[in-house]
Length: 115
Image 1 (cartoon, rainbow, N blue to C red):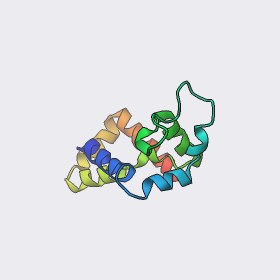
Image 2: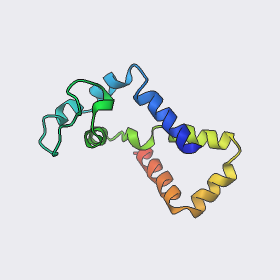
Image 3: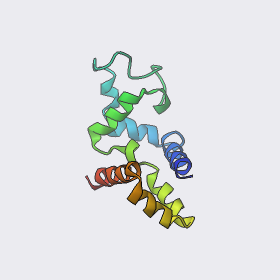
């Protein structure tokens, strides 16, 4: 459930919000990345198009350059809020204490947001 909620929120912003692509193009150096010779393939699948035509490496690299790391955390807050609202606080605490991957992911997001 958390994964579905997080994914839904992420996609609603990245693919459906009318101001997202202009923001991404303004806030990141994505336009300049296409001119760099740092990969074996072009940065985009199609010359024209939005975020959906961009390959994974330029997408992550563009956000890394801004230090915002949006793909790391976008949607996780809504997923955790929904889990708490559904009464799953004990399960979330158990997951954090007993699942190294969940604990590590939670701590990574916390670190990224703290920066």
